[in-house]
Length: 246
Image 1 (tube, rainbow, N blue to C red):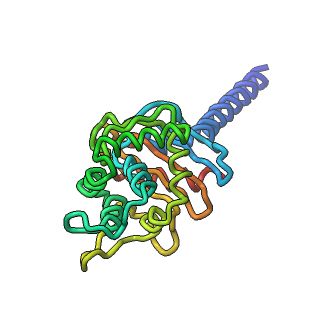
Image 2 (cartoon, helix red, strand yellow; image 1 turned 120 degrees about the horizontal axis):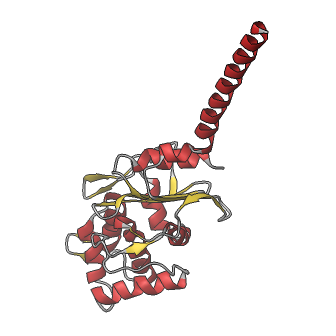
Image 3 (cartoon, rainbow, N blue to C red; image 1 turned 180 degrees about the horizontal axis):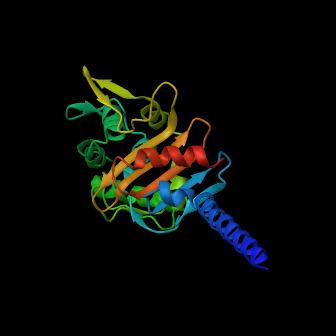
């Protein structure tokens, strides 16, 4: 009788151990993104526009320099002379500086020289956002420094999809650096290289926005992270999302 009780106890301990191990493994499998992603809002979209995975994609966030994609689009929509000199650089060069270097001065200057001036430029940005169906988006400045430039990951999908049809935006997104007047300006997205090229790419960071990044790969896959912990975390997080969800 004692032997039977002993073996029953051993069997019970064995199955308790198996159950605990299974719980741990299940937890690891079911929550990979929680450990990898610090961004409070993120999304991955396939080439057909289908959301593959996301978190809080309709939450509103400050979007920092991702704003500059919309600034560039309305400037290009206005069909102003790209070779016109605006202070030290041409309009074309200011667009490249705005997108590649994320230059705030160039972004604001582009709107200063917009038809009707700065206020009309911001108005055009909001009108375009509305036409694209970005119902939870508002722009108040051209550079993204103002924390009241607000959007959602869901809305930014639409902006990135629209941005792919502007050759100058694609040029800025696919080149690791641009050379203007003998000076080389490196892209703020370090992922860009000969192997990794993007149709659309724009980084962003402010204290209010945290680390932000919106990309469209050459295969038209979109990934967006908003309010990542820092400028250092947004890059590996985008990499993880693009590789993890197909």
